Length: 123
Image (cartoon, rainbow, N blue to C red; front, top):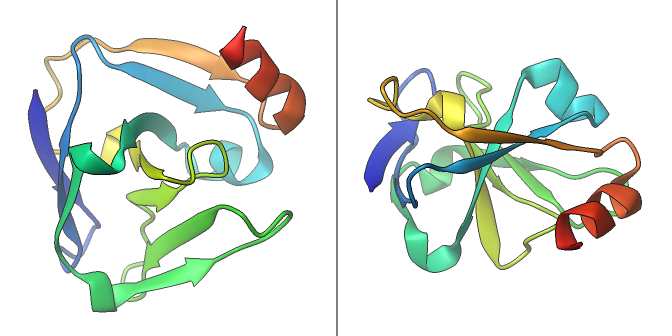
């Protein structure tokens, strides 16, 4: 299945392909908890930035691995390059258009203790 999504002001738009039902990660790290980000992890082949590359600004913290990408106008992070999948993308399910009828499988992710959370996902 494919869906398009983007930021609040519309300057950043993308298309993503995913399996149904999609598997979403509900992370409890400080940034995800505060923003309500629900992670749809996809490979780079399943993600297409349609417009807005020049409108994105980058924020890094901690290990400096994840590239948190925000629209520099409205501040929305609709996708980013995660630490767990540096060759792919994490798309915020809540930033996608027309997915209201799709029931995802939501899995808790211990992002507060990232190493333990990653090991649990790989188990």
